[in-house]
Structures are given as C-alpha cells and as structure tokens.
Image 1 (cartoon, helix red, strand yellow):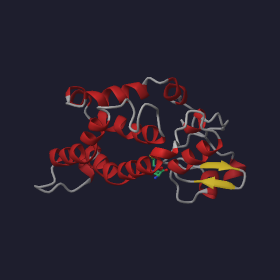
Image 2 (image 1 turned 90 degrees about the vertical axis):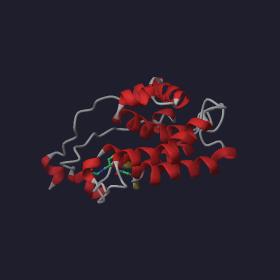
Image 3 (image 1 turned 60 degrees about the vertical axis):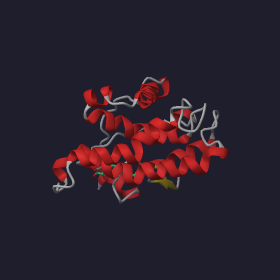
Length: 194
Ligand SMILES: N[C@@H](CCC(=O)N[C@@H](CS)C(=O)NCC(=O)O)C(=O)O
C-alpha cells in the first residue's frame, strides 16, 4: 500500500512460501516476505519498505512529524506483543495451552493490551493519530483485519464499533482494494535457479 500510495512502480513477484525461489533467497537468505529490491538495495522488513517509500513521496503526510514518535511506539507494540497474541489466538493448536493460558485468556489479553486502547483512541478521532491517516493506521490495520477474521461473528458483535468502522474504512479504500490483487506465483527460469 505504501508503494502504491507513493506511486512507486514495482514488479510484484508473488512467491510460494513452501517453495521459495532461489532468486529471492539469493538476495534475502532469511526467506521471509516481503522483500524489496531496488538495484543494489535490498529491504527485508515491511515497515522499512513503507518508510523507504514514504521518504520518496508522502503526499498526505503519513509521516507527519508531530505524531511520528507516538505512531512508532504503537506500531512497535503491534509488531511485538499484539502480533504474538494474535498468532496464539489464530493458531491455538500450535501453542501448548496450559490451564491459565486458554484461548479465552489470550483473547482477553489481546483486548486489554491493544484492542480496547485502539477503540478508545478512535473515540475522539477517525484515525489512530488524528483527522488524517498516518503510517500507524496502514501498518496496523492488516493485523486487526486478521484479528477480526479469526471469528468474524464474534468481532462483528463485540463492543468495538469504532474499531470496526475504522477497519471497514481501510478494507473498502481504493488503495487497499487496488493492491489486493491475485498474482501468478513467480517461478524462476531454470537458468536463474541454478
Ligand atoms: N517482520 C517481518 C515479518 C515477515 C514475515 O514473517 N513474513 C511471513 C509471511 S507473513 C513469512 O515470510 N514467513 C516465512 C515462511 O512462512 O516461511 C516483516 O514485516 O517483513
């Protein structure tokens, strides 16, 4: 989304995580997506890709300096503790649930530490840091989308109307819809993979 917003033309190579192309591993051995290559430059973290794009062009000031420190802190909280809870909530079978660590307890913790504060934040403003979109909205909403999708009926009836409205706004935005295309899976030519 940041690349599209900044109008940076890119060639998108959708890959299979089960069969990562050698050409990708050659530039980024850690093997996670996304990876951005621009000449000699390789960027291997989505947030860094966003930042790189926005430094080139940021017409609506997603990087508005007055809120940037706080926005960064919220993204950091999302990427660390909320992401961990989200993974446990999404894949409870992958974690060893103990009597005190039930799926309900994980959900409760996610709500207390992240979801409820976001709902509160959106009480007085349409976006996380005011009247305008910031990098935090775009960096965080895909994770709230995942959270909502785990149990859509529950989320739709949960007491987070502002968060739901904010999420729907982003899901319906031309920017999001424009980038959510299906691409054919990239295959290296036999020559490239040898
Ligand atoms: N912090 C990284 C996370 C990247 C990440 O873990 N991506 C997942 C997909 S969402 C991945 O590539 N996993 C590698 C795999 O499943 O083999 C970023 O935001 O770029």
